[in-house]
Amino acid sequence: MTPKLQLSGIKKNLRGRQVLDGVDLDVAPGRSLVVIGGSGQGKSVTLKCALGLMKPDAGKVFVDGEDVTAMARETRAGVMKKFGMLFQGGALFDSLTVWENIAFRLIYADHVARPDARERAISTMRKVRLAPEYAEVRPIELSGGMQKRAGLARAIIAKPDILFFDEPTTGLDPITADAINDLIVEMVKDLGCAAVSITHDIASARKIADEIAMLQGGRIVWRGPAASIDASGNAMVDQFIAGRAEGPIQAVV
Image 1 (cartoon, rainbow, N blue to C red):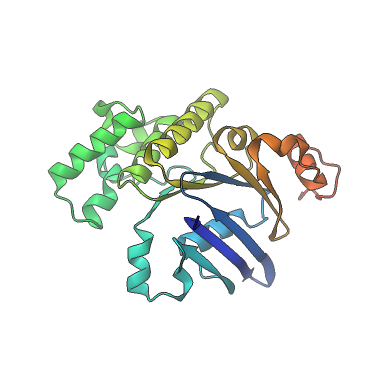
Image 2: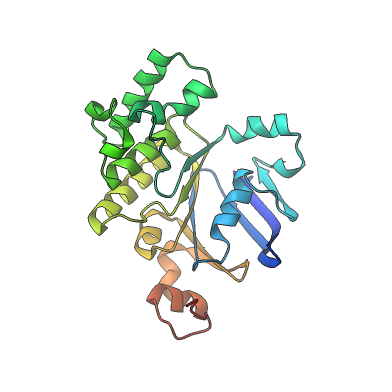
């Protein structure tokens, strides 16, 4: 089966530091891959390269078997419409209402009429269990968990083939975080899409992943089924999931 998304030999140097040093990743349709790793290990850079927000120095990004890195900008823009993204912190526009945030792509990229876009936004709000009465309020009036739900609604409204999640539970209390994890699992299953998440939250990774990969030193040092992470046999994975300062990974202080 052709992977929905594949990163092959991705390298990226930023300010003289080799952040990514040959990252290989792929995710199949209908599967959820979570990339774990400490701060500064290149998780966000990996995501930006996959999304086309950052150009790798070397390596290729394939979407449905097509090399996106070699495409002309106009062609690549069409492929990027297959993506949906839940940003860390929600990244909602304060100047827009909740429904306008959710329908942003429909209105400004797909040119859907505002009444139709609003109807679809409210329908999507219901899917993520965000009450329709919040459609006309500003994001600042929502709690952190509700902002995440709005961000998730925006990510799925166009029914993407590939969903990206950037630290989806950061800043949330454990109960709200677990509710967001449940929604992510539900939405990925409902859409039948591929999902790639980056997180340092092991509880979240266990909940939403079919497979987990660990990024350390610019490379994937382990990958396997989520259920096998406690028996990875990898000292870096064991240290990370146990949260120990002692081990092969040196704490950044």
